[in-house]
Length: 502
Image (cartoon, rainbow, N blue to C red; front, side, top):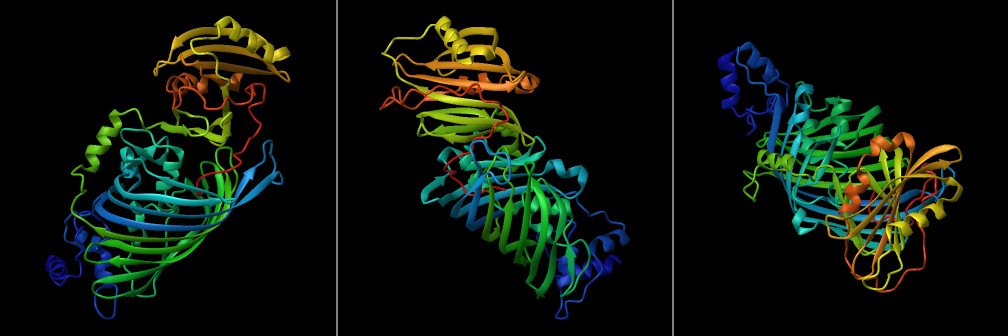
């Protein structure tokens, strides 16, 4: 048996360059020879020879280029829409181009799955988007060209090491297919041309960036092979969930295997996908075409390694954060990654903190009319304004304090309790101002049962606020935050700015 094993390797039948790092070595053997006759899986040969060579993880370094083209419609809830009929749709066209280097590692067994991670260095990351005749363009900031993918709070997430990504940057780099999992298209048994196999549901979920697959499967077929390449056909229909939103996918495509590198080197897939509207994101119905080219490289061009960058990320405080940048409102801030913007007119913006498709809290951000430079509202005057606005809903003040934020803005914070239709409600009002007279109000609302889960989210967000303009160029119309609105109401963005994300 040892002699047979040596002969297979000498003949190049087991010639993947990653021979010592993957349990899927049998594929090179299975594809060898003009007849493509299946051989015994290499794992069995190794076991017979009493040599342990099966690894629990797989790792590679690759260069990737992908192009994604999307057409379809985005589905939006109306401002107070709660039913499937109370929605509207907007046409969408988009094209994204990504070029990056990627070092990745993933576990081949359930007990090693938490080791899944990737280090990506982007050379190109750009998106041209057209929604309801409104064109937008998105790119990665230069300071966020180095990213890490790893499990965060039970799901794979892409984060920047030194600076939180914006929501648009996260959408941009999350493709319908996670390239780090492409090798999992390969089967776990010996095959010959014409043979087919189905992907395990957990593997398919990772490959397609889904949280879970509830039904359906992806069928893979070996349709062509010689001594250097193999070609696969992909086809499937499945139903799953993404951040608690139901999605249905039909896909069809092809993939090419580079036998020498043991790599899926090319993929072309078409998708038809329909995603339900959720509390955190719009829904959509789209047709998409994805093309991916990959090649194996020795090292990442930055000289950094995956292990090094994951260690750096673990020491940073950016993992759970998202950067918000309102060009209309002329401000930026950092907040927990569960916050989502539903609307932003420049005068008012509405955000919701959503966990497991449940709205925990809502925040209304309002640009107030500028005051004369140096003039400030007193904390007592601010409390009077809040009590007057709440009217019969007002119960009592719990806290009132004044401080400087981390960005040196004057910050007044008032915590109030009361009732809306006999339901106990907790409000937090924060007023931020500078010496130039600019004033901005944040009004948070949540039911009393959500206060503990919400924690200090308001302080993290408000403390990081920065005005990108010291004064507003044109004073907005008087507008008061809708702090009395029940948390369960829905307000959707009128003009979404990104392609649907997986």
